[in-house]
Length: 348
Image (tube, rainbow, N blue to C red; front, side):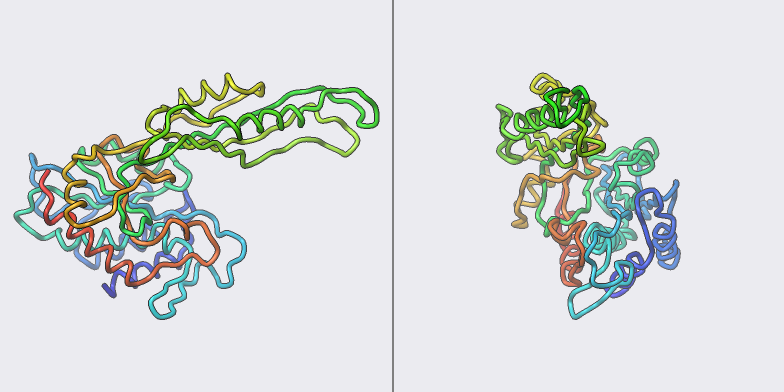
């Protein structure tokens, strides 16, 4: 595994913010060249297929992303300087999702030269996952061979997410009328917004999910006012809505719009909740291996992949987007071996 650990450290060492992953893509492509792997690329996306790809066989994708968020405040070290201490490697993108990229790649290279695979295998290291950009996996859906199964690499402690919450971001605007704060005049848009926020905080969608729980609404940003003595005539706030499989994002939007008085504008409806049948062969294989199954509260590229998919990878989601983000070498090795075991007994 040492060469994959070295690859991970090389990926950490280059900035790879969403939409600006050129250096990370170059690092990955150099590695594939040295390994003698033919690859294709589009933008900052890179993919390869197994050596003996045969038409007519089921197709499995290994997919994870090479982009990162901006470094959070509070880093004690340079986030782009990988620091290795014993089993621990610290650096931006180490956990989310560099470890998954290199562990999936190790498993892909294990299967790559085998002649009698019961499936075809595609490795795709893609861009713009963190900002749900158009230049990521979405741009490859008409390019890659259609998949019978997609294994999405994200930090899940190598537990398997068989369902995932959707994401709906709402820009809300409460409107009032300006006036002097010292006199009883005007209509305070901030108070109107607070009333709506209180409604959103207490509202419960009727249908919960066994795997994903209830729909969750969280107001994360608010902005109002221009100076201390003027009643604000506008207050803007943003609501982060995590939907379960019972509500398409369009339906959740309609419910929320009817609940509050503020204007509500969705940024996108495309990141709906996703899942896979509990009886799918990969889920059955996970049970055979004793892999815990769960529903994930976080959103990934699964939301835009129109094929049966699961999310599983080394690391822990709680470390993602934090100062001091880290991964353990042992987690990467365990992840690669678990990916191999998952596919070795898989029949699609």
